[in-house]
Length: 300
Image 1: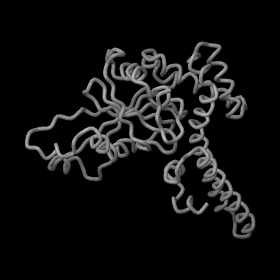
Image 2 (image 1 turned 120 degrees about the horizontal axis):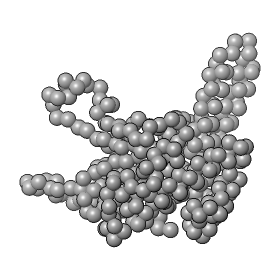
Image 3 (image 1 turned 180 degrees about the vertical axis):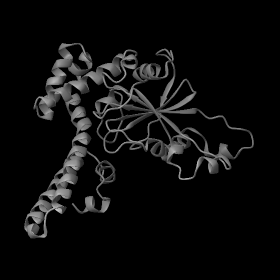
Image 4 (image 1 turned 135 degrees about the vertical axis):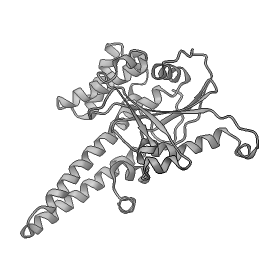
């Protein structure tokens, strides 16, 4: 497995950590026909886009594109802004900073930004997000001055979300099927660990990434546990928010009950933070994933 990370990998980032799989994935998304011998330079930055262990893939293909591919299980309208904050870092890595001061025009790889969505919330097969949608100024004002735009292509990779796309990438289709099977198992009441274990067995038996799963069974179990932990964190966060709102709605005569709910609420936060830390997630990334203030996280 070719991934080289300081933090824990997910199955998605490991599957697409090799040039051959990246070429297959890019061809499926972009409708291109690059062959497996096409030069690909992986230049992924650590902890760039995602909250927690879900991370991005950044690479140059055929010397022409800077491609960012981000995998997300939650819709996020701020992806253009988040990518904008980091794209310069990649260019700094691949371009001599002094070259920008030369008088002759410097040619640079064209950037492309892609988000692969496989969450449970309803989502169209494809959606375009634009940085300019976040600008406060009106369109009229924007036209009178220099403009800035960054466009992100969000693609639904759920089994029923984009069958045509999945049909062009066997690896991506297999990954999507595994995630869907885990969710199905959870709906039947299985604990996450058992749901993943059963899915790995199911994949091997049905020829879905069977060679990979059989060879890296224990590693895949840990990767998928990491992959699903952020989803769990967000579910718990929503439950906590509901509990907090319910506590605030009690009458003043129930102050003692509110205090007990608050104690449980804080304890649940402490447990969630400990869980994410155990998975190698930094305090800063926990804050981004859960919405908790960083100062509060650091106190636990």
